[in-house]
Length: 386
Length: 110
Image (cartoon, rainbow over all chains, first blue to last red; front, side, top):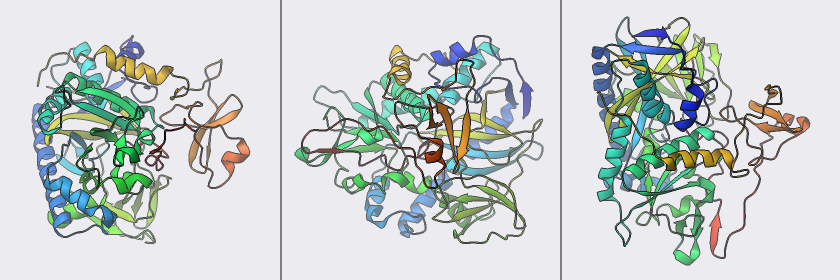
């Protein structure tokens, strides 16, 4: 893999606006791009598929052994999660964050953004647009086609209205332009797959006692299928959580409830337990929130329930090398062996390997200068391979 | 791996531009002054931007004065201060909303 300096297209801002990127300053500058070999892409694709299968093994293990407390999942929702797994509820996508060193070929799982991954539009559309403009030969990116194709295939598993149409509501939190951008793009994919779509905010979802406590949209219509860019770990702890299980037959949630297991950092611990020493994994252990943190060697310490690098720190022999503030960590931490990502002119790229419908589907690279922790301030860089 | 161009429909552009144009539902802006500069600060681990006399929480580099009440310097400096949302409309009999969404202090994405 190589990093190249590139010249941003003169009409970049207009192009990004046209493709639905609500913000790009400081995030998508189009001043660097990564070049991979076809062999590297083949390895990434195979590794992504293998990791996904391993992750599903963890879900099976957690359900079989009822490890709800270990994953900080309220037991009241265990049956909901088990049922969504048993019935193989519709799932769209996920993103593995991988550390890579092209000099040694080492490729390691850093984490799995299984439930609410963003950085989708730039990976699926924006970098593809760049590829065409730049005239580069190829890109590992079939995200858009796979999303539309999978949504089309899922129509058979969802309930149609009297006219044969399928409604899909898509919800996100109010706070984030990035989240809105992601659900707006997924809504576009769904429309291309023949759905009727409606966007709403998560706090607009209502429960109507006149309709058997069904989940409803702001217009009062029952929600039959709901894509939510909102973590299960939050949904399961909020006021309306009690209506989730009773509404299982009437509202299909996408991503499904079992993603609460996959999106949890304890996944890393159980991957290591089930596949110790696996070449794609980093040694990982759970430590309680009160742990003093004096560990031998270099480790990355991540909150069990955390987001965007918050409360993550890099520690070496008890010394904190780098740390992020945040509001997570009460449930304890996962200690993951530190992996030194290859540096390119002071930039550290993290490879975001996408999974759609359970299969490897493409790559999005985010890079960050002089930082060991990738957070929501990393920049996106397009890639190509030859 | 080669593939045809991706065409996004007008509906997608409309949905995204609606996010930018509606004044309170919500409008996300940079909050830059007439010279293009912003004035930011960090209090209790959260970033704020000064806009029209108040401090608004920054998400993904943007602020939304239509969604959040602005705080004074004193307020945002207070330990435990959480930016509060501008409340929404009322609901009909038998319908309750707001039972989801209370955990969203920052981006829900990852």
